[in-house]
Every structure is written in C-alpha cells, then in structure tokens.
Length: 127
Length: 420
Image (cartoon, rainbow over the protein chains, first blue to last red):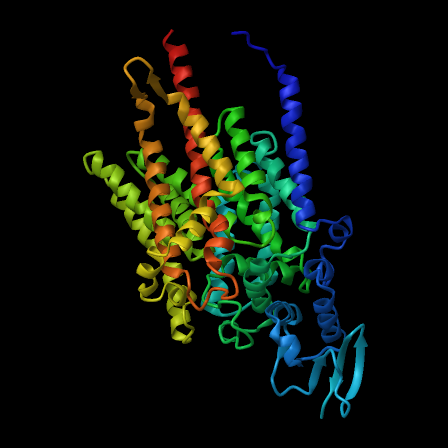
C-alpha cells in the first residue's frame, strides 16, 4: 500500500482556515458588528440588534423614550409569549402593571389620548 | 516586581469574583460594585499579559472570545430572559430583597445562583449604565481561570487542537452569549483536572485546598446542575480511591463539603423569601418518571436530542479516535486486547465522572419532561430544545478523556526514549 505524505505547512494552513471560518461563523451567529464594538460602553448599545423583532423593539423604544415607570400591554400583545417576555426583560426597570394608565396597543381606544406612535405601536394614556 | 506579579493568578481573579458576590449577599450592598470590576479587569489583563509567552494559545482564545463578546449583543432566549435579566435586576434594584421579590413574570427563575450575574451587574456599574453588550463580558472573565487549568494537562499540539475544537466547535457561541452551560462545562473539567492532580499528592497544603475550594464553589454557583457534577466528582473520587486501598484524603472530602456552603446559604435565603425552587417544579415527586419511561416516542426524541447533534458527534469521534490506539483486535483469534494505559487512574476517574453525570442527567430528563415549567406548545420540549446544551459537560469530559489519552501516549514515548 502506498501512502502520500501530507505537507505539514499545508495541513496547518487548512486547520487555520477552518478555524478562521468557524470564528467568523460564531461572530455572525452572535450578530457581531463593528459598530457595537466601538460603542460597547454606551447606554442601550445592542438593544435593537439583540431583540431583532421590530415590533418588540418599537414597544421597548416607546417605553424608554417616555421614561415610563410602568406600562400595560394590550391582551393581544400579551398573548404572544415571545412579545411578553422580551418586552418584560427589555423594558426593565419599567414594569408591567395591570392597572397602569400607560397602555400599549396596536389598535388605539377612541376615548384615550394617543401620546406617541411608533409605526403600528401606540402609547395611549387612559385616565 | 516579578514577585508581586506572581501573586496575580487565576485564583486571585476567582477570589475577587467570589468576594464581589459575597459582599452583595451578606452585606446587601452594591457599594463595592463600583470598585471590584475595576480590580477584576486589571487582574484579568495582567494575567493575560503575564501568560502571552508561556500559554499563548490560551491568551489567543481569550482575545478572540473578548473581541466577539464585545462586538455582539445578547440575543438568545435563555441568556436574555434568565441570566442577563437576573443581572439587570441586580443592577437596577437597590437591595437583594427587592431582587428576590420580582412579581412581573414567571421569568426569570429568581432561585438560580447569581455569582456570574453579580459580576455582570458590577461591570454595568463600572460603565454607569446598563447595555446589552458589556455585562455579558463576565463570561469571558470567568472562562479564563478554568482555561488555565487545562494547561496542567495540555502539552502537545494535538491536545491544543482538541481544546480549540472544544471551544470553537462544541461550545461555539455559548461561551460568550451570556449562557451558563459552556462555563459550567469548563469548570466541571477544571475541577476534575484539579481533583485528579491533588488525589495523587501525598500531602495537600493550604494553597491546594483553597484552589480546589474556589473551583468547586464556582462550579456550584454558576448553575444549579453544578451540584450534580460535584456529587459525581465526589462519587468518582471515593470509588477510585476505594479501589486503591481506600486512600481517601479527608481534606479533599472536607473541601467538597465546605464548597457547598455558598450554594446552600443561597438556597436557604431563597426558601426564606418563599420563592418556589424552579428545579423542584420541574422534577416534582417523580410521578412522570414511569410514564415517560414507557413512552416510546419520548425515548426516541430524547435519544435524538442527546446523540444526534453536532456537539456529541464531534466529542464521540475525537474520543473514539484517541481510544482506538489502545485497543487492538487479533483477527485470527478474534481477541480484543486493551492497553494497560486505559486503566490508568486519571482516565478511569474521568470516565466514571462522565458516566455518572450522564446517567444523572438522563434520570432528570425522564423525570422532568411534561412538567408545567416546560414549554407546552412543543411536544417533548426539554428533550428537543435543551438536550444538546445540558449535555455540554459530558461532551467536555469526553474531550478531556481524549486529551488524557493523547498525553499518555506522549509521556510513554518520552519514557521509552529516556530508557533507551
């Protein structure tokens, strides 16, 4: 049986390339971006990239922009486990309170005042 | 200066992380959060600089992990909703009592240990506000001491390659995304390596005992599964030494017990606050055990979850390739011969630990599936979604076995050369 000797340099290069591709893949799967690394010490960096879902990000953005201490999500929004958990942890320290007058919904109630609109998400104040 | 630098070790880093937690837990104040992260980051950097020449490959791994970690947000479910949310609540709440009385959602389980989370919260304190990037750097800081323990056993380039495969192909992003499973696996291996090393020593000094305590304590304080791993380590230690004329070192057993104190105190504190333990909700009284055991569909799903994934495949392949050198088959007599190296203490130790932990996890999976804590929309949610990550300590110990097997070959070869 004849054996072919593999050049050591070639072998090391192949291993190095495989690892390089894998590291790039890990970065990609972790949503790596150079704009984040430049701002890693700034407030709220990575919030939009981490949440990914535009609707959830819009809700959190409205809560943070208005410095809300508490809020209430509409039943439709609360039904989705993903929206519920992502908003609860993303908006913290603002808390979801059932009796809050800061109502966040997709369909605004006619008798309440619309305080802000972010695409299809509304913050309405129901006194 | 050199003498001073000698004191800046991984153990000092772990001690600082532990002190950061213990001050918060006992004194219920975040006053030290402003100072500890600065000292921790300083010690972390000095350790890296000190080891650039001696252990370049570990420094390289840490630099790559740091780069990706600081350039990526927290995106995964468990990291965001459990681990970093706990850290965020530590950061925003004034007291520990406020932290443990969260009522907003069934997430996150507040009874989970918070050693790494206090570090994350103090990193956020250092920059003055919360963001989705810097607090999770705590994972990289915590990975450093465990990785340095691997240098005690890794000598050849091949075993260095195995470590790289473990970190970049098996753990992938789990070491940097804020999740605790990869960190737990690293500490499981580090504790195992230390225990094997120390069980061979005739006399243990205070330095050895402190080091073992720090690693075992961290193991249990990262994640509750750490207690299971610790129990498996103790079991293996007793079994191995029972075989060896029962040479159990009482100092080691005592260290095991003392290292459980922080997690026991934490659990008592949580019980005192009337928080129901999430693990007790999952496992319940074991009434689902028999039901699941006879459910063929579940067993298939569990088998798929455990064995049919990339991590297990890579770990088994590397393990089999390494062990195959020590097993020979005589084709004429059809007799299998095992090399005596396979019966060496450190190999047996690792194999017993990984087998017992594997069985323990299997029992937990069978007992837990179908619990109300699991996601009900997905059938067999735990087996399908959690098996690959919860078995990471098993994958890591398989790679550790492969490292030991290859190092045995190298040391045997060197011994032969010396004799010649």
